[in-house]
Amino acid sequence: MKWYLVASLLTILTSSQGILTTLSQTNGKYKYDYATIPFLAEVFKLIVSSVFLWRERKKSPPPKMTTDWKSVRLFPIPSVIYLIHNNVQFATLMYVDTSTYQIMGNLKIVTTGILFRLFLKKKLSNLQWMAIVLLAVGTTTSQVKGCGEASCDSLFSAPIQGYMLGILSACLSALAGVYTEFLMKKNNDSLYWQNVQLYTFGSIFNMVRLVVDDFRGGFEKGPWWQRLFNGYSITTWLVVLNLGSTGLLVSWLMKYADNIVKVYSTSMAMLLTMVLSVFLFSFKPTLQLFLGIIVCMMSLHMYFAPPHMLVDIPPAIKSDPESLVNVPVDRKTDS
Image (cartoon, rainbow, N blue to C red; front, side):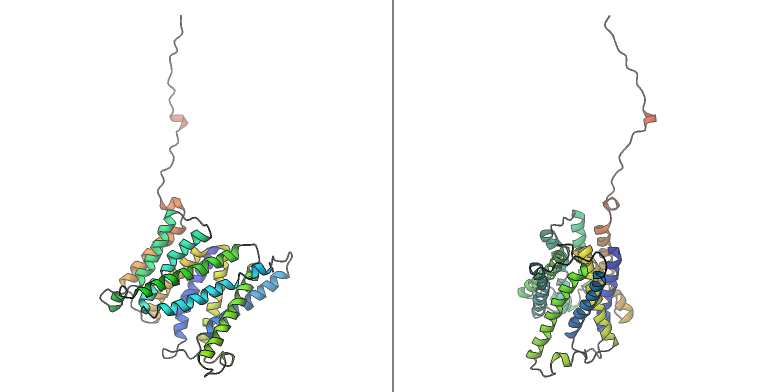
């Protein structure tokens, strides 16, 4: 399967996630425990990957599966990084408002490019670096509201702790993605075997989170497994399936493409969500959204287009043999 088809599908599903999550609310509130969504999504990804691995093992030759503990012990690390990242996100929101947090979140586009270069030793051309910066500028522009509004002033009035935590959050998000790509590409193991390892630990960590939430709440609503499906509707299940499918597509891109492709997919998904919100939720489009889309499309073309489409390289001048004129040369001989 071509990477751009997977990336396009990831863009559509990622864009759908926010819309489905909004539609799953009742009177602006969740009737279900939102913490159960990531857990069920991890279980869904684990089941799908296990089925595909089982089918793959029935073929000849069997897929490569590294079961050495030195390799397996590396797979919980992304879950640990995401766990720390989630806590940093909550801490950041204590110092900045939601609009500022969303705008600062675009820093992960640049930090992903930096860590992509430092840790994976992937060289990017100057045009590609410019494209990554343009992508961050474009997504930020689309999120900035009119400067006559209070949210514009709040962007530069947050305490220094908020900015530092925002930068840390962007670095952790990029680190988790880059490290996952390293895991997926460090050997020729089956993609589904690698997924089984990732999602097993992901399910365990999300289950631990549910248990911790129970202890914090004093088990007022009972243990998590008794209320796991409370308040679920068809839309809620679509949220779970969509989130799980998104994760499977991301792992495919980490194996066969790279983090930059994923970053572009998720960034374009954000813009697509804004456009769809105009029709679904009476969202009023702004000039900033229009300009942001243009900048992001320029960035997309700048990063992935062949160099000869971006820079006018004059063709080499070839001489026409028929146009050459033989000039006679007089040779003088000594008498």
